[in-house]
Length: 336
Image (cartoon, helix red, strand yellow):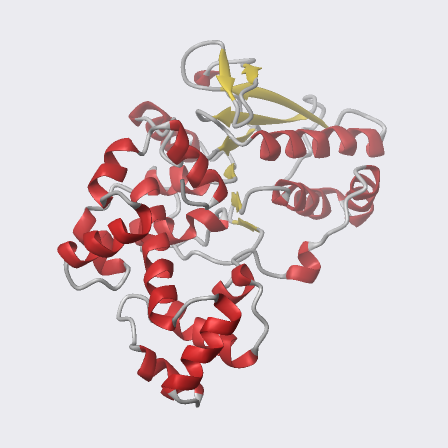
């Protein structure tokens, strides 16, 4: 991407706001652009907000953002940035998808923040292009878009397309854009002005493993959790897991009771059901497809285990997934 406008004014970023867009992703990207202008001491960048219909869009925090322009007001040289949010399909209407395809055909740089990789992939723009997305949505994305190579990076910037993993990773993306187009000094200045420490250089990955989510450090338990996570579609028995990590089944039972407070079987059922819960909320896969993806041999067995943990059936959750409580669950990752 190049930001030399040849005297035609600032390079403009146009942010296409989807319904309930990520407030954090938008504001951090905008602040990075503002700080770049401050570091450069002239207006290298400008920005505008657009969206489908109406005069404003509501953010994930409930604030309304006034739209500056309509969808068709983009001009040559603009960079189009789709800002997704909690509900990955919210705002991904046929009109928006067709619009994205038209802008891509015009040769405009197109990208997405937070969960917008889902919208870009749905528009057919990410086939055989690497993408990243917020870790809470990575499982559902991989199930739906199997032709899109999903990676664990904080951002992907390739071939005029870019995606981010949500949260503050919009800053990382903007710093990368500044470095490529304007040099490292500008990016360093922006990061300094924002008091931004790149914790991602330490963490390296956004996708937390089961062991990381459970804050478990015992090496054998970590190995067992990794086996469970890796083999979720064809789940091994506790004895098979114990054999793979080099201990007896009884030892595995004791370790899980001590470190996780429940048996390996109970933990694995909860782990698989939690993945299913996210897929029900985030995808339109059928219940049987979700059951198979989570290692259940039949819909009836899946429904039985699901009800034991959530006190409702997968079908009832699917019917209610638009309710406020389930949106909150999707945001936090916790059961309601």
